[in-house]
Image (cartoon, rainbow, N blue to C red; front, side, top):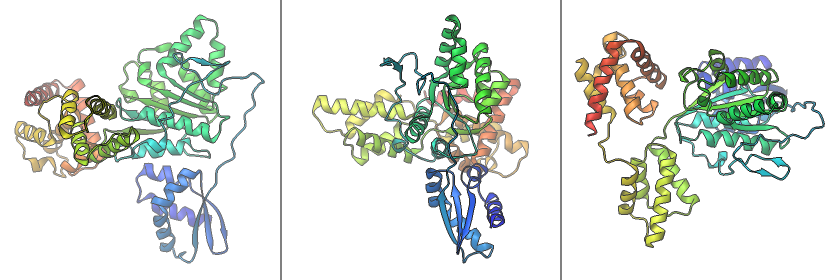
Length: 449
């Protein structure tokens, strides 16, 4: 029956995206055949729930296709036993304190924000994969990836997910040594240790007495050669011991100035996830959830209005809700559309909005092509280059998701990412491209004036 399961996996592999297959299907193992049942094991409870909800019918179909439809399919959680590591009798803190946090009692303790939990994270198309991967990473049991890198601009939820990972791991296993720290504080602590002749203590803490390292804002490491070198040794030690490591960044490692090639490679050695700006439906869900949590009563009309105007990030939405709550309380009035418009006018400029349609009109006129040519399946340069310029400008001047932009040119979201990246590369070295993009960007800026 092991052969049967491997055959089913090979069929599913050809139908699912590579990331989805690696994340959910590849880690399912054949356990046993019992009576008329084939029993499969998931590495943890979260994976079990996700597979049951999203892939169970697909697996059953494949079982039917190979003539094993008389067998019942049973899924179980089959977590690997946790490894115990020997340590000396010295007592060390369970979590590494950030320098700015006060000490509690004899131990320094890092206060993870309890509000940053998985059940309070609003999931949408732009963050679904990052949420699923982070949650699976935080569960006990074996998993294919021991290293995660989460990429997102400020205010899109990467700190929420990274702290949720830390809290979940500690909830499942309070004995775990979870070190949550920013790259800036890691560098500061290393400098402090060097100045006070405590560098060996610093090395031991991170290399030998750490089960999970969550390192935020790795883009801060730019140009810090000694810190990069020390971190590289630390990551090697943790990797050799199969410890879990999670990074967050606002920039791709290759785009971080003066970051060593070796460290950049380490950051991208595991699973890389991105969080894009939330689409309209997700913004509605975020506003509804946060309003409910703070007992702020908003009409559907006001929520839809806020979602249509507050597109920058989640913090902007939170700021609007706080302002509405304060205004309503101080004026002793219900929150109205007029009040919402006043608050939004303070947070969002009154400039005209740049849309993909406006960018498309500008690009097609400039390059003397038709809008239909941008959506052509042809890879000829006469079509591909204007298309890539259009995608680059859309990603720079609008908050449209990759999926939405893909529909405007009949492409996949990965093609959108590739096309815009090609223009980014040409801008660095090609003066003609620099001139064209400078001119087009200036025209778009004039549209908002």
